[in-house]
Image (tube, rainbow, N blue to C red):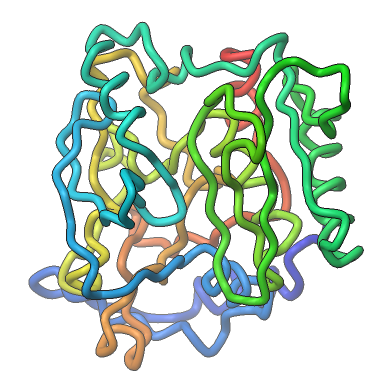
Length: 298
């Protein structure tokens, strides 16, 4: 697993940098000190869609959420993908007994299966296989290639030269071609782990219902069309394993995701820790909490 380069230098800059905040506008400028790994994470996971696509209100984990309607019953919440079928299930299972509870939508036999095309570049195959092996080695969930004797559904890993990574959430029991996970050429091995965990049923840490106790979201610095990435999801259906928000989670967005043009030009953050610290998006390893969540489910 590739470790973030120059992290100590980056953290030193964070400690020395001065910042001030007024009316929700964050004025800390740290963008020049971001490492190539961090920039890669931003490019890979900030999945963009046609600005002309409509938005629709859907009930997700007991919370109404504005999502991008991709057409044909498909919807997107950042790099998380859903279908009409998912929301019907979510509505039915308001008590947390269905697909969209962290304790539901589980892969059979604690085994997540995947396939990819033989034409996928070898380097990308290696990233996918290494990410799968990492999860298998570190959690109670096995992630492995589908074989002909398997009867369960599987993830179909798509590859493209375009930017962006995304995945459908939780087990769908889909075959031929399987449920979707998209790994573009700029997706790192860590971002691939992130997407596999989406496929396992885990959503972003900043969507945690108790988020505001640990984080401050600076909405004035977030692109108007991207605020849905910061919606808080209700705990009414028992979705959360814990009320603790892990700022180092591999599922946590960083402080510079989804900036407005002005925020990007000035290095203003879109989210920060309660103590004012910058969130460095970890895509190097699963934290103890990440592993505990997967193990609690599987």
